[in-house]
Image 1: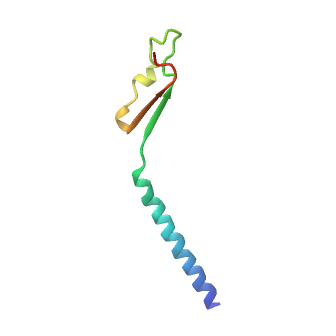
Image 2: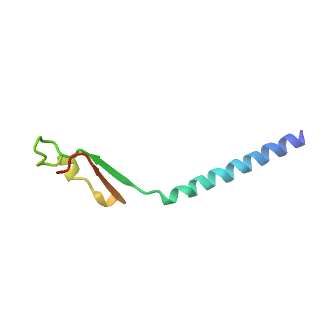
Image 3: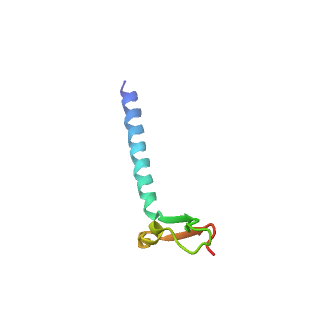
Length: 69
């Protein structure tokens, strides 16, 4: 019985240690925004209004895709 409690305690401590490490691993996360086809007309002259109003300062990287000409 004492061995079983020791094993449970050891398992709990290992899982606690692993969960702490995974939280620390997320501190280097990069926030990016991908916008595909941000234009709304056939001539590609106008950008979608919601895209124009976005606060791009919140993102580390902006990725544009689709027809941008």
